[in-house]
Image 1 (cartoon, each protein chain N blue to C red):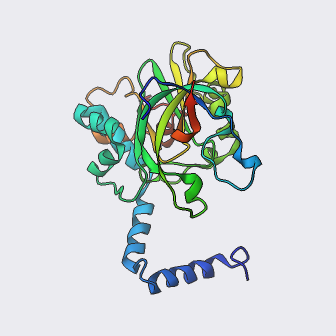
Image 2 (cartoon, helix red, strand yellow):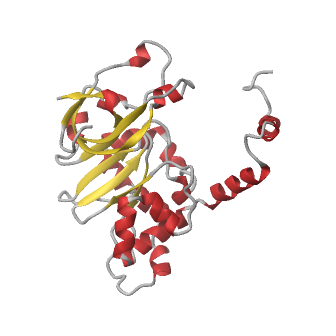
Image 3 (spheres, helix red, strand yellow):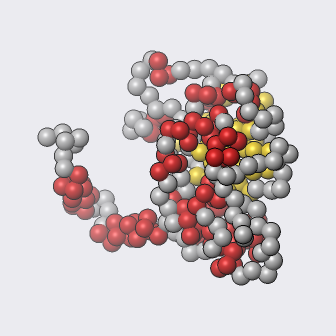
Length: 92
Length: 193
């Protein structure tokens, strides 16, 4: 379990280049660094559910990113918060 | 004939008949689901917001567990995704988007409006949120922080906006009438004017 405040990096992975898939991690945060806001709960992996495969239960987190850092524009202090499953997060 | 080519009404009738025949669901359950789905509207969310403005205990429940707070107002949430409630403060404004598709808290806000599903809204809400807000007439002062919440997975999100000035002593019904769909997505803010 990742504690609130933990610094994380979203895996810079692009499964869509390897074949059919269903990914809930938006492109714009892949490879980016954020901070865990809190654990939202545990849910079956949508990447498996979409293909009717047995879906392991995964921890889901709210992760906060500095908005200007994602896009190279915007107002300092603004944030984007995204729901991300634990396997997409690595230590930063 | 493939599923894609089938006429939708006939396809629906066939699937419905199969679900009944196999005992997966019942006519009553289907009717109940239709009734619940039709009951979802921004008026439901507005009732919750108004209650939270006048009742600190309800506000606390709403922020802790939106689905339980909805059920406390008689809104059926069984089988639906968890509902998260984002509390605006004088220093923090929330904006909700689903960049991947159009996830929306339908039980409390109804069907997502057309603009919520548009590619333009979904792209600009994360890339140029203040520019997007200003086109809605919502100009955030620089000292107010903006938090965009991208609804990418199992939660659905609604905003609990600030109670407008000049509404002291107003009834819950009068307050609820001030709260519109966009206020609970965060593109606009309620006003008493």
